[in-house]
Image (cartoon, rainbow, N blue to C red):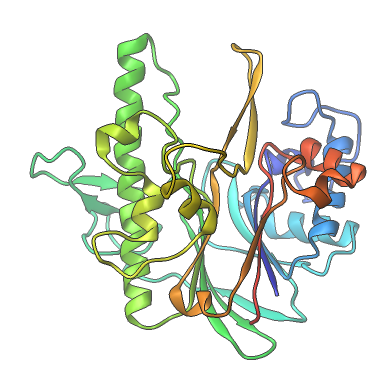
Length: 341
């Protein structure tokens, strides 16, 4: 079985208000890419993935006026994908949802939020992801109220063979200091965002601890906008959000080989899952942002990970149509997990 995480940059811009694809030459949300070009590229990528389940990050908008599920299912129908049923959890107001697109012939899936609901006052422990988490960000003995701008998607998944597991789809808060005026304010906002992101990852890890204590097979996957050694603020806090979710201080750990590779070496080549153009520097920046973390019981099944990178993966590179489609479709590349379930 193949499970994938894929951040599709501004997927929402490819659909009209009724969830229908807009296959024209108007500009998409991607720089210098038309809607038709991005849709065509995504069709090639999703077809090549041939996945049983894709955790779509930045999925089409869901609201009282728009159906993100309908949009994804129309996309799947357009390209005759096996993964053709869409599942969405708590919607947000960013036009970037987290959704699961899956093959209903091989999988049953339902939104399965854990934890207690909270009031605006919040709660400690591991409340439901659409609630408010109390955590002291700045060590002043007064806990702050932490919210997710994009609540993680918790899925109870059962395979055709009868295997049951939990998925947690994540799109962690970006650390970019948007709206900053001057270097001092940029640093203050960046540090504040970093604190909030780490608190969100602590919240996720508390959910992981609860599930592992119940001996629940678990996969945490998505875009963390973070990782070991990614920026200078990690030195200030001593750890990354990815390390928190993986497990530390003697806790039972999750495993992702790409995170392990970065954590276990000081220098050398690192795997990457994204490629951004830095306008001011006139060059591309590559980073490891997307992960598929598995619990120890799933590790015993000897899963295989793959980053569908257009230059680093030999099959992708030697298949020109797929290579170009990966570059056109998004600024992130899919990460897949093949596992016997």
